[in-house]
Image 1 (cartoon, rainbow, N blue to C red):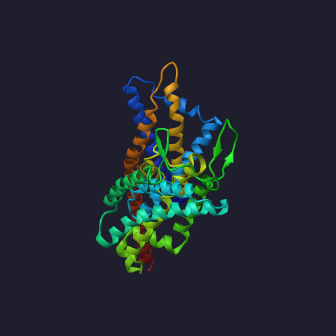
Image 2 (cartoon, helix red, strand yellow; image 1 turned 90 degrees about the vertical axis):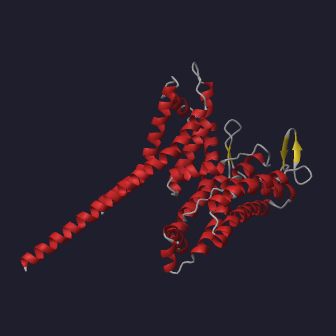
Amino acid sequence: MKKFDKERVLLALAGPVIALVLAIALTSIVLLASNRNPFEPYVLMLQQLPYSDIQVLIINQAAMYYIAAIAVALGFRMNLFNIGVDGQYRLAAVMTAVVGANIGLPAFLQIPVLLLVAMFTGAFWAGIAGVLKVTRGVSEVVSTIMLNAIATSVIGYVTLSNVWGVQVGNNMTTGVMKKSGWFPGINLGSDVGEIYGMVFVAIALGIGYWVVLNRTRFGFDLRATGASESAAAASGVDAKRMVLVSMLISGAVSGLAGLPLLLGDSHTYSLDFPAGLGFTAIGIALLGRNNPGGIAFAALLWAFLDKASPALDYATPVAYEKEIATIMQGLIVFSVVISYEAVRQWGLRRQQRQVGAELAAAAAQNTKKEVAA
C-alpha cells in the first residue's frame, strides 16, 4: 500500500515537473538561437527574490492569479471550460468600483457589500453562459468568449463621462472609492510596500475549494458529473442543475479576482486596470492540476516571472528582453499539454500492469488450490 501511494505521488508530481523542465529547455533553445546566454536570464531573475519589495509584489500578484485560477479550476472539475473569467472579473471590478465610489457605509458593512457586488456580478455574467448551455445546448466556450467581448463594451459604457466615468488626466476612471471600502492589509514600510488583505481571502478560498470538493456531497456530485453526466444522473444527480450551479460559483469566485488590486491599491477602475488575468489563470490551473496547493505554486511561479522579468531590461553588459519570461510562460502551457498526456499514458500502462499482475497472482493461487485438492 505504501508503494502504491508513493507511485501516486510521483504521478501527480511528474506532470508539472516535466512541464517546467521542458519549458526551461525550450526557452534556453530560443536564447541560444538568438546568440544569448541560455542560463543568465534565470540567474538575473532569481537575484531579485531576496528583495522584500519584489516579494510583496509577487505575493500580491499571486493572490489575483490564484483567485482567478480557482474559478477556472471549478469549471475544469465539472468538465466545463470557463474562458469567460476575464470578462467576469473585469466587469465585477468596474461595478464594485462604481458602488464603492457612490455608496458610503461603515467599513464593517462597506467591505462585505463590495465583496457581494463583485461575486453577484461575476455569477450573473457566468450564469448567462450556464443558462444557454443547459437550456439551448450552447457550448460554454463559445458563449463565454462572446460574453468577454460584450463585457468590454459594457465596461466602456459604464466609464463614459455621462454615466459613471470620471476623467483624470488622459485616463477615464470610475472615481476614487470611499475609504471605508479600502480593504486593510499588512503595511511593511514605505520601502517594501503593503501585502493586500485580499491575500488572506484568497487563502480562505483555496481551503474552502478543497473542503467543498473533497469533503461534501456537493463536491462529490460535482466531480461525478464532470467525470460522467450519465453515470451521475443514474445515481440521482441532476446534471443540468450541477452545470448551472457550477458556472454560477465559478463566476462568483472570478468576480473576486480583481479585488486585491482594486480594494488594496488602486481604489478605482481605470483604462489601465489589468486585463488578461482570466486567460493567464487557465495556464495556472492546468499547471496546478486543479489542486489548490498546486495552483498556489503555479500562481507564485507566474507572479515571479512577471515581477522579476523587468530586471532583464537593465542587465549589464548585455540586456535581455523581459519578454523572455512571457515566452517561458507560453511554453509552460504548451509543455503542460505534452507532459500531462505522457504522464496519463504512463499511468494507464502502470494500472494495466498492476491488474495483469493481480490476475496472474489470483490464477496461480487458484491453480495451487486445485492441485492441493
